[in-house]
Length: 259
Length: 319
Image (cartoon, rainbow over all chains, first blue to last red):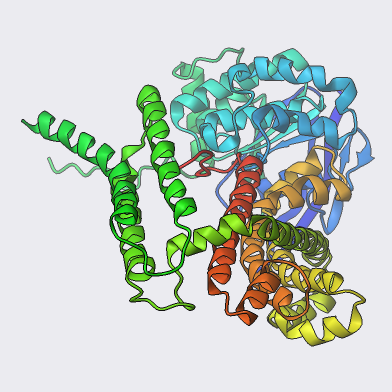
């Protein structure tokens, strides 16, 4: 398989406001293959969002490099779409114009604006084309954000906890939508999440990360066909395995029996 | 019972809308004038009010829109006019020339209308030229300060110090430097609207959420795109906060600058009328000013609502 994103021995150190340096990522290496769905999961501070930002080109590593299709990443590129956690829509633009803004940014608006209704349709937003971001729900907002990235026809979609702020029904709905898009477009998707179920439901591979310093502790393959059964045995088994790896499965207060 | 009370009240309020002006009209006819005034224009004005509100009542009843809730206020307006007319025109208790009655003021409005219209046009021309120049320069300055850190370092302190100086303090200098009083007026109004606009635009630009810029960059936007398509639209609400401050300051500067240097405009007219002790003309000019400036404010608000339709809580429409 061809490598889509190559992360080569990357380190990123931040300086916090009190002057201490924090190793957000230390010597992380990872190959992500074309058409793969990879989840990065771990507790806060494990560097998963930092890693995603390095892949996007929104941030630069101090050591090592990230390669997209063999080319070193130096700045953001519409070929690598990025979905933010929330509130990234431009409030002064209607949903239609929000989706079309990537075309304007790439100066192809005139030629490709007939694409906008397709993406509105794809995301089930056609009747809200003229609405403004403040008038719609969080779930719809994330659909717009996804459509806005997809219209640039990216090879890689980077998702930074895009469903973290949604209620569980909206979240499940959007997860199914993502899987549909992923399968139809054969794109590479990299998802940062703190939701174990979400990672198991969506991914081909799950990268478990640990903090201080941020690094990869384990990579698990998910060998299940889509659509996956959220309550199935292998689903639950893998879920438990991940929770164990994250040290979240141990019962904090084992019941005591005095017989 | 409750319903009947309600209906009665609506009827009462409808009557109140007219009643005040009827009272004023009756007062005007019943008492003989002690001052030398042509009362016909004033009486026609009152008849005009009555007819206007009658038509409005019919239209709003047909459209079922809110109309009557201003009834008591309109009644009060009529009563105040009646009392004012009695105290001045009818009894001379409020002496001339300082307190002309409503009939006399309205007589001036009618008889001197061409003159007033001409001076209003001069005022509005000066206002719009100065205001637009100030706003354009303000936007440019605000963008430069808000976007380029170096410019912020060098220009912002200058803006802060010069901006707090009331524009009218520049009058002697403006009169000396500029070839005509019109250009001097433009300069004064421009600098007083420049400061709040520049300040607010720079604030709005530098307060653009980081996520917007990052989203735009991942969508393929270059730095010009970030400035003109992201930061600038994000600063539009702040721009209008600046514009509304600028409007108020500009009205004041306009009138003062016309009073001291100009040969035309409402400020000049007031000063000139005062010189002749024609206080009824002063009051007439003030009324024209109130109407003209209100229309300007209304128009600016219309533009604002149009441009900020995307903001939550912006209500477009009338009261």
